[in-house]
Image (cartoon, rainbow, N blue to C red):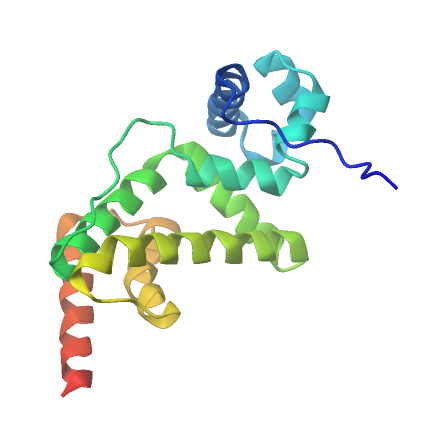
Length: 193
C-alpha cells in the first residue's frame, strides 16, 4: 500500500526554496495589508503566483503557514549568538523577540493563532509548538554558559515582553527588557542560595 499524502517539497532545491521564500514574503505583506482573517490560500495563490496545490504541499494547514511566517522573520535581522554570559544572551534574545513582534505580519499571525486557540485544538497545539521552539532556541544560545531554562523560566522572561506588546500596548523598551532580565537573574540567584 502506498502513502497517498503529497511529497513534502525538497527545500535543498534552490527553485523550491525561492518559491517558498517568495510565498512567505507575500503572506507577510498580505497579513499586514488585509489581516489574518482575510488571508486565504486563494488570495495567497493569486498574489504569490503559485497554485493552491503548491501552497498545500508546503503548508498543509493555515496554521502551518502561520508558524513559518512567525518563525522565519524574513527581514534579514540578525539572530543572537550563543555566549557565556547569560545576561547578555537573554537580553539579546529578548531584543530579537521584540524586533520580530514589531512586524505586523508576525504579530498578526501570532494573535490570530491565539484567538483561535481556545476553540481550535490545532491552533492551540501550534502555539505550544512555537513556544517550545523558541524556548529550545534560547537554551541553545545559552549552552556555552552552562545555563538551561525551564519552561517556567522562559515564560517569566518572555511574558513581560508579550504583555507589553499585546495586552497593555506599551512599547517594549530596552529598560523594560533590562528590568525583566535583571529581576529574573536576581530571583534565580536568590533561589540558588
